Amino acid sequence: QVQLVESGGGLVQPGGSLRLSCAASGSIFRIDAMGWYRQAPGKQRELVAKIFSGGRTNYADTVKGRFTISRDNAAKTAYLQMNSLKPEDTAVYYCNIKGPTGWGRPPVDYWGQGTQVTVSS
Image 1 (cartoon, one colour):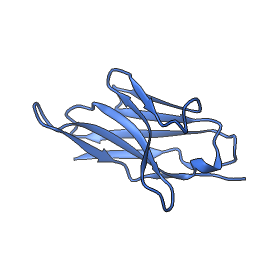
Image 2: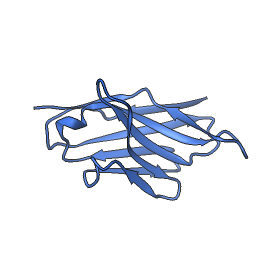
Image 3: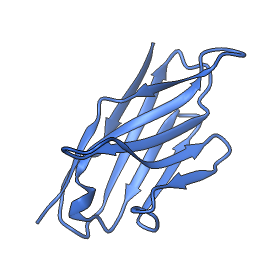
Image 4: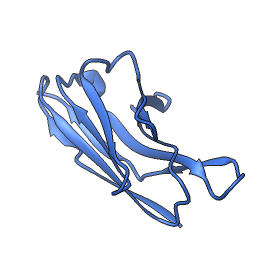
């Protein structure tokens, strides 16, 4: 069983910063990608940032230049440094990892429980 534990959310003023962490534990065969998604009220869940095992990253256009994703492979932990936060960044942020359950098996997605980020003055 795989567990993802997120931390670091909270209330911050516009222009402020937050750092989210996601620690994975349990029976993980291999992590191919770690990422952060977010869902605002009334909206669909969207990709914020993703980092692959080789270090390649993807970012949503709305966060490029403000957010940075990183990972510690040995600790099975992903981080999301969020700077210059805006009110429109307010959402529940979910950690995601993707990887196979064994050799030759297709990848599966694992999700964290979500952490609230609120940007407001």
